[in-house]
Length: 355
Ligand SMILES: [Zn+2]
Image (cartoon, rainbow, N blue to C red; front, side):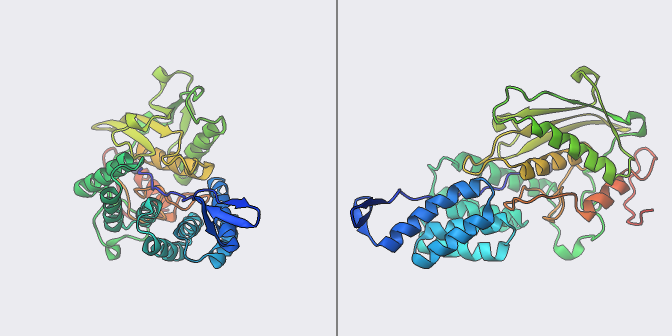
């Protein structure tokens, strides 16, 4: 699953000397001074996912100094994190017009498009970012991301079809050619979770999020799939592990990576690796985001070998800028039930009528 990227903007800390307000040694108005201070105060709020508090503060700042692009950027980011995509887009466009040389806006705008499934817009915005800011610290990640999105479009793991062709009930039709499953004889799936102790960014509650994510899929499948913990990796068919190093992934713009090994009966083994650190250091990994990554990667490990273009689905190709608690979509639930509905090996029903 590709990480969507977004970046808060900050400014030089303004200074106060007597009755004078200064920015980079130049006198500024008291209103501008206060607005810039609020801008910088919005960053820890965005990092802590306190998005409404950030919006309240930034709206005040915007009133005092409507021409500061960074304020519009952070407002757009906070709104995007709350899922207010239309308002977010407006703020980011304003920021872009006021200050096209502000890198954060291009990156956040690309992330917002990606988050909404607008792959072409995302690719062109990220490409524009790379042209304008080739030396940016996130440029390497962005170019991996652009390459990855293009590759998935080319090989069909992000489907190309238009909205009207989408089945509202399930996405097995969209994933044709990229579906497999665990055979009955392999159930319950023997799972080993490699301890994350010592992995940078790992927190003990991550294990619980992963365990809950396994349970969520099991429940969605009405126990047609189930998991059994084993104490050694050697005894497991599905090995989960944590890593802080995205360069160990096939594409370093991914937030997790799953590999499944199949034979004529279906899946025989799988591995899931989950990234314990944020792709963008300025926005830490929240438990909402981690749960999203775990659920998505487990979906791959259960046999969904491709992605959807519907941002509601857990098997959507990207993480979202929106940072809210998110469960499986109705299409995820119907699709996993259908995938495991039939016991006949090798035959996967795409019939939407479920008992
Ligand atoms: Zn994926």
